[in-house]
Image (tube, rainbow, N blue to C red; front, side, top):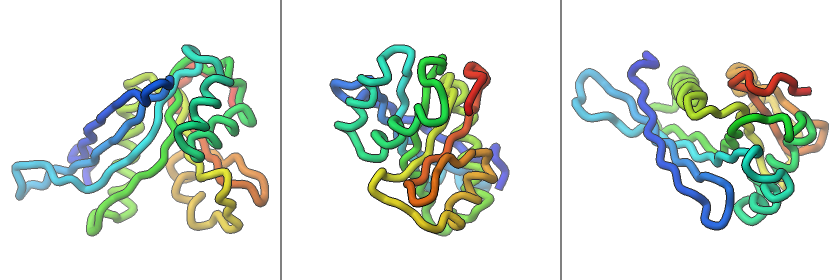
Length: 175
């Protein structure tokens, strides 16, 4: 699938009373035989800017929104100096592609399009994690896909998954 045929429409909403933006990214493709785009999947994520709000306040707000978001923020300081992040951080929750469009090549093209567009929004770092209560013993089915996309795994044995990827160079040092 040609990446040029992939289109992503972002819908942003402020999480009321917090410093987070909730994002729904709807993924479309254009097929030669169709005039209208075909909705093939959706991604959900949160955006936040640690420069605008203190890290402790962000952690408290995240805890009220979702366990996955909270775990991601708490884990953030394990692999980087949060106070040195100069721009926006994205926390991915889901990327669901509908059948029959769920082939690996197309999923990668959609993710790359999402990443390209997030970099235009000045997103510096992308995090992917699961819930702090969801420990996975065997990462072989999850890690290789994200590793192929350039993510680095930060987990210790018997801990939930946390993976990250720096997509801009505004922050120079991730441990």
